Length: 280
Image 1 (cartoon, rainbow, N blue to C red):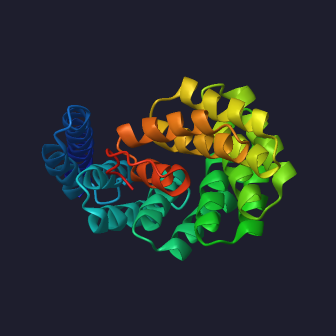
Image 2: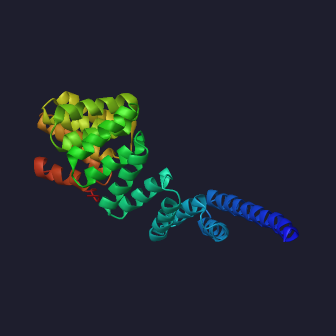
Image 3: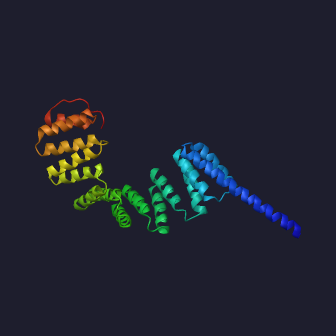
């Protein structure tokens, strides 16, 4: 009996060692495929790793990410759930699954995941940010503001959080706090065209037209992505402030870029027929 035991123990260790090596080999190879964008091959190798070690949380996590890249969201959710079952402290499994739930409109489940992450990692900035964003989607503005404020307390250097909180303040008509947040966002990110645009809308509503024009012009200087909208907004301010010719110029530019409201407002306010607007 003693001789038999001596033989079996080293053999068991050898098998375990080989399996561990094979798991890591499959995972490394799968990661290489994923890095090249070949997620189907990555999934095959992650699956091979899981067959050897069904409790390997990393293999499930990375396979879930590969499924996500292929938009196989149900499979991704299943794998992230397996990760959490194996290791309840695997932080980013909550983050990723919460994001997928958000993406498919299951907002309460998304909030549950972010809340679980926060409970286990109370100083995690992104969890508060993401949960705040989800609360905002549900129009639960008080809860959204609370989470954004905590996120800012954790990381006061993130411009997006100020922009998001400012947007909520703007939506609930707390104009002064919105203005302060957008100014903070721009200080941290001078190329934040959205915050410039919001400031333009705020100053326009306050009838501070020169300030509004400056903000919309700044938005266009730092970004060309939403030029049509910023032209329309600036054109509206020119119109409200009695600067007819400048309003016409902005409406025409917007129409030329394909924004249909540019053509509509030229006709409505100045009886000018100007084709070109196609995008609503």
